[in-house]
Picture 1 (spheres, rainbow, N blue to C red):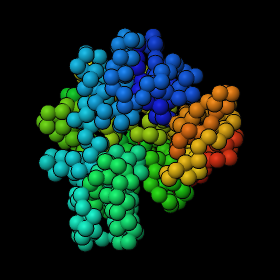
Picture 2: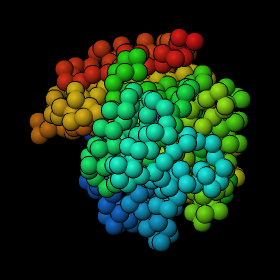
Picture 3: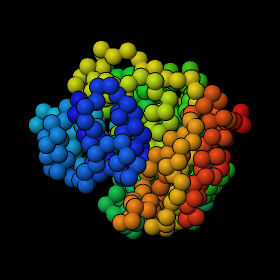
Picture 4: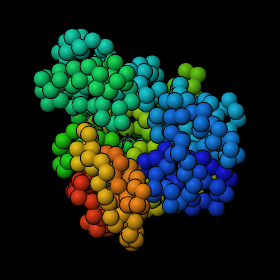
Length: 422
Ligand code: AMP
Ligand code: GLY
């Protein structure tokens, strides 16, 4: 099979690593890819939201399957454009992808289809948004409506911070994505990420993990796209998995199909396990980053048949995926300044050394003209490990982190704390 993989982050490096191991693969091309991905397959300098160029590239390589990594590609409508020319695509249409690309859409969707989620108000004027805070207790949760790379959410301890977040979003910090804000009830509980793959009609659960959204140890600092993850996560008892499946996954996939946009691809359910059961925090129309990295380390089955089955409506013919019992962990190395303006360009040494049981995925790197690896974004490297126990996996990952020489970066030193502290 010829496969085109779209994206350039750590999630896509992990997907490329798993796809490259498939016996079904003839040729893998990634666009735009990154230097880590380029060690596994061909990369082409085509942007992840450049739909016409991606469709042309799929035709050029006679792609049997296109795999969408990031949300910007979903929002840009690549799946729709590929459907029009008959190329199978793993990744939802732009209409189905609104489950991620608009929080206001998703809140109304939850009301319409009876999914449990936090109480909320949507506003496009600062005065109204600030007045709406009266209806909630601190801490206040203020979210930009659209895509903001995981940085559009502020959990504010007090009213002044909440009002500043409202002014920030409506004042244009996130561009059009912040033209509306959603103010919502703070949900008390433990957070979790659960994945389901779907072919438009049939679905299967596809693993779960726990992310660490705050920038610094002990869950302090601003929200980020995710500073580390591990899987399996102890919060996912069999009972919770069953509840998330019945109360969130099934009604979401049924609802989006009933709304005329059957879902093909992976639905990422971010939920809070509250005293009253799971409640939706948000949907994403793609794999989690860095959750995907730990899932790929634990997936024993070949990934490609599942991606193809989703793209071609044949998921009912697939057995449930096989997962290793071994836990996996991912530690994100981020550039100083992230999630604000990251320090770019710092040289990185030792990222490609061999560590037992460890994979280092590139999330935002570049090679300069002398072949030196340099930081090129916020989250730069993902150091991932698998072992018999979570403690061992964690020790392996942090030993590899210590061996990487990159003075401009930081990382959390407590990934997996909830599970290890239990
Ligand atoms: P999101 O970008 O929606 O995933 O939100 C980022 C993070 O903010 C989540 O991972 C949660 O830790 C936190 N968060 C978002 N919404 C809520 C909420 N309603 N209650 C409590 N925490 C929230
Ligand atoms: N790690 C959470 C996300 O991908 O949005």
